[in-house]
Amino acid sequence: MRLAWFRPLVALIALAPLAAPSPALAQGEAQQLPPSTAPTAAPTSPQVSTPVALPVANVSDPMLVPVPPAEKVVMTWREALALLRSRSTDLRTAYDEIRRAEAQQRIALANVLPQINGQAVLNHQNGLVYSGVSLTSSPLTNGTAGAVAQQTLFNYEQFFALGTAKANTVANQLAFEDLKRTLALGVANALVGVVTAERVAELNRSGLQQSLERLDLTVRKQKLGAANGLDVVRAQQDVESARTTLVTGDESLREARESLGLALGVPDQVGVTPTLNLDALEADAHGVCRSADSIDERSDIRAARQQIEVAHRKVTDQWLQFLPTLGAQAGVSDYKNFDPSLPNTYTWNIEAVLSVPIWDGGTKYGLVHNFQALEDEAKQTLESDKRQATIQVIQAKRNVAVAEDELRVADRARALAIQNDELTQTAYRAGQLTSLDLVVAAASRRQAEINYAIQQFTLVKNRIAAVLALSTCNW
Image (tube, rainbow, N blue to C red; front, side, top):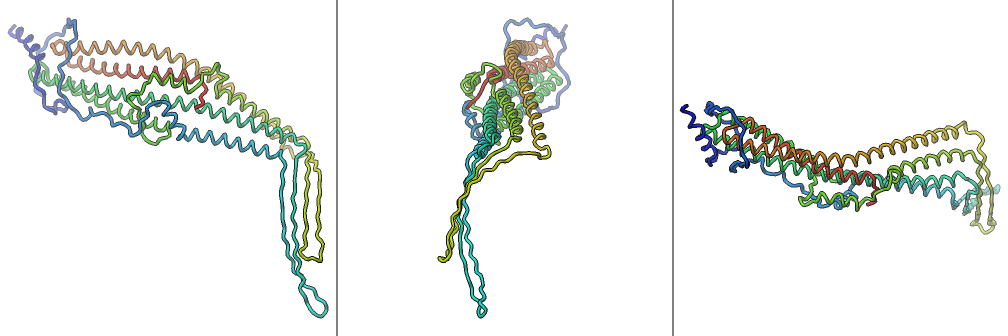
């Protein structure tokens, strides 16, 4: 009965402003704790209408300093795409494939055009003549100059191969367009990833700040006898847990910046400006990429369909190898003697060449079967790509709705976690709850804050993916 008047007095003293603890205690370092002196009382549910905030403690810690910003920063998605266009190795490789296809097309055209070759020969001879008495030298110098022209008169396979080369060039151009779409999606995801990691790192420091303030309050209560050594240890454990989360989040931020750098072709960390408007990314996606009306208009599906056309033409090319070919050749030459006593001669000829394939051991048949198999593989690839693209579009649209639902749930969970943390702090200050309740409520609040931020950025990322899932990009 003697302690009945003392318990309310201790609770009132705990609510009063106290002197700040030593820096070691504020930073969560382990201390020699006295035996438990806190009064024991059965916890009761607090009847509080308005949450009371904790007194702001003057705490400091080196880990509260934010991660240094990246040396290179992008401000908009269009700026990122411009950097990608100038530095992407994947984009340059795909462009080189188009150049190779155009070169093959030029070679196919050369096979049906006339070919003209010139030739010149200078010949010097020095003969010996024996007249029976003496041996004399008889030099002879002459030269030949000529030109030969060749033209294919009938070779349907060569003319057909020219069309095949053109179709192959178109297929590479369509693949190049689809690569732009996938690279744009990758850059958008990398940008959102950096923004998400930046926000999570900021929340982690806020969580550590709050943990240090709770430790400060617990230490002050322990000095007055309103908390025991176990309460301080629990508060210190909460601080160390917040530190662990902060270290992990900082490394995730650095990795996100490096992923953005690799996506943009920069072997270093690349950050984003704090003023980056994520809502504008979706608008930029609409401006950079054109929405397709159906799956069949997407670049990768058009490229796969074009590959079937190329494979079919190659089969036809091989069948045309069985046809005979007809060509013409004309030549002119001038034979000139440098000895005035010898005559000069001029020759001109024209000839036609008919070539009929008879038997090559079965090579042509083998090539026909080979390209027929490649054509069937191209058809299966198209069917597989269409199935995957259909599911991608369906999932992309559904993911937006799922992300919106998850964001609403995360928002409610965050609001409840904040309310629970504030009420727990108030009840703990009044001596109605234990330090374990305080630590659990704080950890739940930190996680709820992080989950809410992640869901916000996930919704933005899913909206961009839904736009690009059915688009054709030509930036």
